[in-house]
Image (cartoon, rainbow, N blue to C red; front, side, top):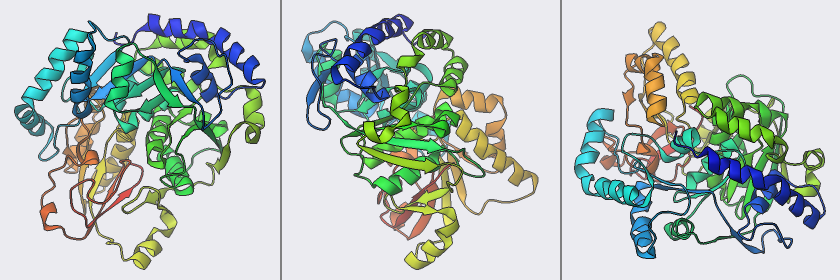
Length: 467
């Protein structure tokens, strides 16, 4: 068991008293975001009302996560702190230093050969200071965190901007720099400007080809890449409850692309199902005892304009699949208008690569849905007109997908199955021919699509969409 149930129970034991103290202090019902923030104050029970967007506040996060590229300097710094062990549960994930080129086994071995010294250092220092180490090939940091460590109502920081993915399990999870992580691991307070609050009310239900990814693509189109700066985005409503847990994670993940401090959802049945499916029934039992505290007060959602600094309303029943880009993740285009937009902007219409993966869309749910289409294509003798590659989000996802025949379905269509790692999403892609810098189009399920992001070619028009 990798999660610490006793720690979670201790945190939950603080919730009733601290939330009641905060509610009395502010004199009104509380949003989920406020509940989590006030419960994690470094000082304990709230003694003052904090001004959104102005007050600097000390917090006590529950855990820390680091990826292999940023962990190196953070842990070198932690070595100077004179501590024998980290103060909070912490993990290191080797997922950034694996280049996608040929396929999983060869690419992984090549990375082990090239980065052996780094991996050995991270493994040994993690062992010395009581840090969990997820070796190369184990999975992408944020998918692994969602599967093993995230829990409703918790607060964590991570040395990667997409730490926010854990909001899919009801956390306040924030991407930080290495120095911030060191402070928390060394038992020091962590400072954050008390965020503003953006509420997103989701009504209706996803239908047709739409998916959770289309929700955040729509939000990005509304708010732009800077619209969420200094704010936490809190999703609620009947539409939010109807989403899967990994779908919620996808939405929270791309909150980084609108500049949001983080995003989150209230504890609900989809989170219960996911926690049980990933072997954390004990967390469900503990969370159910304080379930009323793991979502916003009812009055908040009845009159959200009173409690949020900004309110966005999206009817999922009317939402159309979106394709965002190129060169920016906030340029949203409904799929029905894509042909016209491509013609007007002279975008290359021949798609040369399709890619599924990254911390945004690499769950079992994502692969299963894509595989269902691939299976139908193969059964009808359709041949791919573009190359296709996938990065499973974790070894658990990859193993389960292999067990259920999903990987076999992909392989029948000639799909390249890359390592359980970030790969092309962070530019770790040795794409053949990219050095020619030819104008071309790719479409992927990642979160970012800035110029040269995936393959180093400034003329690659990368579009973000669902899997």
